[in-house]
Length: 289
Image 1 (cartoon, rainbow, N blue to C red):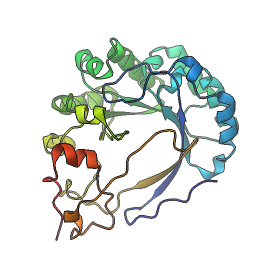
Image 2: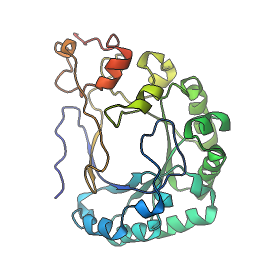
Image 3: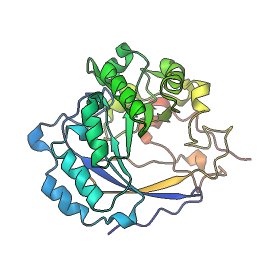
């Protein structure tokens, strides 16, 4: 059974998406990722995945997205895409490192099978920086080649990055690089803790006050007290169903006692205790008027 869209005073539009987390090995070993590397024998069983998908009819969704580790390493990725297409999903997205898209024939095959869009992460403008974050030598060159192939194929794709301590200094240049090279607006995402200890989070999460101003101004508003110079109402909110729910742990957000008088108290989601513990709470001042 699918879930109803979350009710929110922010919601101007609801996009219905289905996320399929596929467990498999990843081509990168990113410094911010807590998930262990899996062998091929520990992949998500294809038969159980197809069985689970019967609970999520295509007519209930605007799009389906295959994600988690590196979906393009999944041995049954071709069969999965073909099944989704035959089941009536018209918009099929894949989250990927982009490295395997450096092989043009493989990209063409995925497009022919029914993939309509790709989401690619890029963490820096140089191989030294990107490969330092992915901990995988050669990952930058392969990802860039994959992006160039996508650009030449004229298929939809987006480029996103994470705001990390390690790449904050390079983000303005990365924003310009994506615009000039691929005609794309770079999407900026925050790192979220995905475990109670959150060792990777403490190692990598950027402090809000350290984010370059032109980067902060280009981000979608995520907290009213951080984005004081932006209108918050009207932010689009998506709801996403997950095949095999609970396959990835995600911590809840919390509000501070000092948040109570804020004008946005009822509509704001708050933030993570891990951030408060590491960086303090001085940045989170309530908006009174």
